[in-house]
Image (cartoon, rainbow, N blue to C red; front, side, top):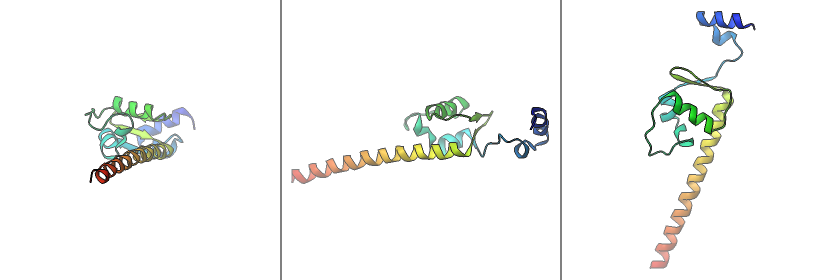
Length: 115
């Protein structure tokens, strides 16, 4: 499809249906950082971060994703970006569970051998 058709159809609102470069996931900055918990991938949880484009861009860059777009108020991702971010979150969750398991095991041994 030619560039002129894509540009002109964007004014009418048909850009989503006509252009092949559509993004399947559109999220507001605060929703992307807060509710979806992608903040964990680049920042510690105790740190207060601003909900702006630079923060979202840093998270996506640290996640080593490509071909994403940041608009004025939203993050635009392809379908495979969401799957990759979900995989990274699951990997992070597994690491946390492993650390918790080791800590509880250590506490149980100390408690058992103290008695």
